[in-house]
Length: 532
Image (cartoon, rainbow, N blue to C red; front, side, top):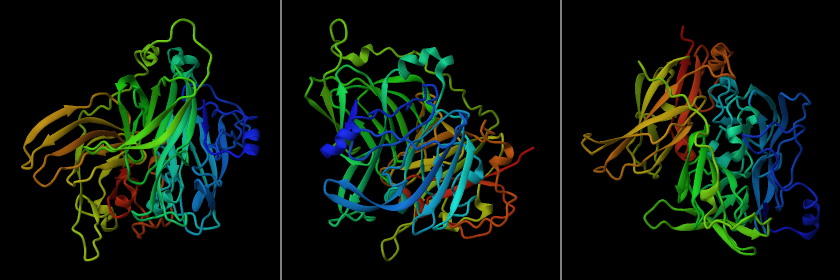
């Protein structure tokens, strides 16, 4: 399987002499010693960050944020922000239990941080400006923490997040698991796989990145417009998907093929979800899917991103090119995906105990436009800039809460919580008068950090409350003290709140992951205290 794009002949000769697959990109493979940069067959490669530490339980890398000029579309060069000169940034690969050390240097013309999206890290490593001074231009910061949740995560800034992510600052982080004690997962671990980073971007005529809703819209996979991937008919693929777009969903369809979803934000599901026509990822969300492409050698198959509207408009995302492969014994099945042998149970996910759980309600809304048409976005009637520490909801380490997430707007809002997993319990539909219409339990149990809050179709339409259980646990990779890490530090001045947070316990952000909405106010935080 090969990912291709427009490749100069000389570069092609160099590339084909190297491995063309991203090694060890599986949460189901043993550790790959001595990670090296790996070049894929494309004009720009999805590479693995180089581990500079010989200790097998430490992954230590250098990461630099800087301006670069990148050819995003054919013949169009754009000034972008990059990690290590790459768009997207290098894949950071670790195993559960590893200590990750990142020597980060900011060579951008503005301050920045790194947020480890989905990872349960110490509060002062989270990258939010609640707990970390932004790294100034020319300065460095050392991130260090243990990882123990096997899944695909991603990293991005949390300063001027909408602009800096749109300019290119994002990368994937894969935490793998040793499956020597999990032989039932071998069929899944044996499937060829790729990390696919899904994005969109608008560029103006001169190649500049448009930060407004104008310019030419491009759909990107691993930083490439309409890349091509070589596949073999009947040979299963495993795609680790992450949607890093600022505000657009990625609804992925492979015409004529069924998809199997085996995992998401928090790693593997308990059971595979089969017979899917498409898979949707809201901004910030991840999905782990399996498919078996079928086609004749030399033929092509387009992978689409579909709209969610009634038109179901489709946009080409990438092209699968069928090549010759080893012919399997016996007759080829008409639909090979049905014959793929996956274990009935992938793993067991412990339900969050909601006995005696405290309930809190968070209403996502927006204000009225000002004279210039600007709209503020609110949680419980306040923008992030208007919050005081007294407004922040409280939680204690070890406590469980049920959060009722209510969207009163005509736009979907993907909800993201820093630092902790949650589990969706149910969705409740009410009419315009607040009367109960329907309660729908979650179809399956999943650890998540990002979930969609469906829009309300007009003032007279129904509204949906998504009920989630949050466990404010002390996870294996951090202590109780690390969970509330910034409580005793010297003055921490939030760049967003612009106030002194000395004496307050650990603050964990939650916000809409449509990044312009978060920047315009749809963000809050939960203050986690020490408990007993």
